[in-house]
Amino acid sequence: MKQGNVQSINWEIFSSYFKQIEVPARTILLHEGRVSKTMYFIQKGCLRTWVNNDGKEITTQFFFENDSVSSIESFRTNQPSLYSIESLEPCVLQTISQKDFKTILENAPGAKAVFEEHLFKRLLQGQKLFYSYLKNTPQQRYGELIENYPRIVQRVPQHYIASYLGITSVSLSRIRNRR
Image 1 (cartoon, rainbow, N blue to C red):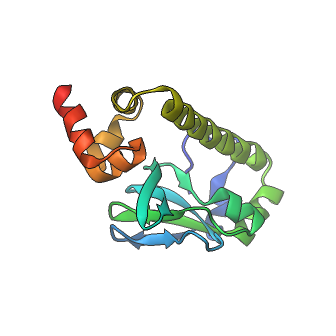
Image 2 (cartoon, rainbow, N blue to C red):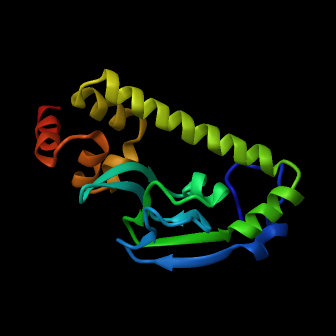
């Protein structure tokens, strides 16, 4: 399995640990409240994470080609996941189990550093979004989204973007019309 720009690890020697699956759009890969037993590496497609707030879905993140996705907290601690993972497009995914992931971490020099870097990037992205909610208007958040993550605007349906920005679809339409 190829893994972006990570040359320090020969991922090919671990290819037997990965299983490829194809899922259609709108497939729930992990339900909120269940323990995450699988990590997904996106070869093709788009996934989102979301939480259920009294029956209303609130999108928390989007993931695309070459991203890895799991409820990392649940995957590493066996605690129930705080969110769901769903495909937004038909996807081709490489999957790995908890057990096999632990085997790679234990046997691949540099794998822990790669995993730590991944965790740091996810934490940083989450913090940026959190502080953007506190400090910025919806118009400013949408501007940041266009500037920093243009493929979200290009590939994700508007109602998911609105949910991610913490606004209604109607408000997002107004913001888009003003630009």
